[in-house]
Image 1 (cartoon, helix red, strand yellow):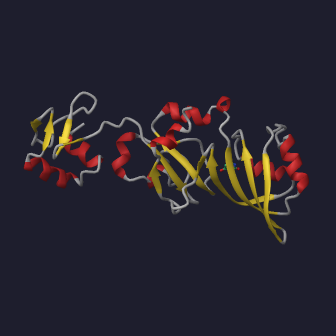
Image 2 (tube, rainbow, N blue to C red):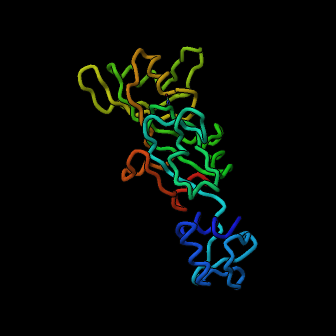
Image 3 (cartoon, protein in one colour):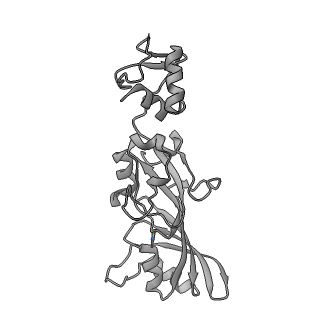
Length: 236
Ligand code: URA
């Protein structure tokens, strides 16, 4: 990649800012000053420094997003806005993709990465990574539903879900708030399970994946990189 593009992508300022750094002679490749913005560099094989600081080669990126309503969990779409459209262009060269999907009207914890092994560690049915949702339900969720979900619910297509943990959080009139922990991820699973007991999900938020909770400081649409410890939660 061109050195001006690389450094701009890595947060050293705009392409213009980077050109100034290059002119100043503070950018070095394998200890030689480089002034040509078009110079191709490869961080895997060459050592790039800016004002003496090494530019780290980072092959993989892991982001936690608080997905807002109204965007789809895809990388690109001709009509709809996607979660990847919300990511700063400085990440574009990483070619991030969402780990699994949340519906367009579902909010909350969504991870994005370019690491296929991370995606697999979270999504493979054999890895049993629980996903936790909070749902606002039109209808009264009952202790019978809790028992029913613990045994597995037959969906409208005849599939019986794996045992799921349903917790009744609050009730107000005919509305209920519940927390549901699933160990599998069938299409529209939460909505279909709640429909199978005769009620309707009005709002749905994912709050946790495995041990990783949604960062409460992230506004809808905001994201941050995962720490190394957070990434490691899924590689044990
Ligand atoms: N279950 C659903 O019904 N929708 C989601 O977005 C996630 C789980």
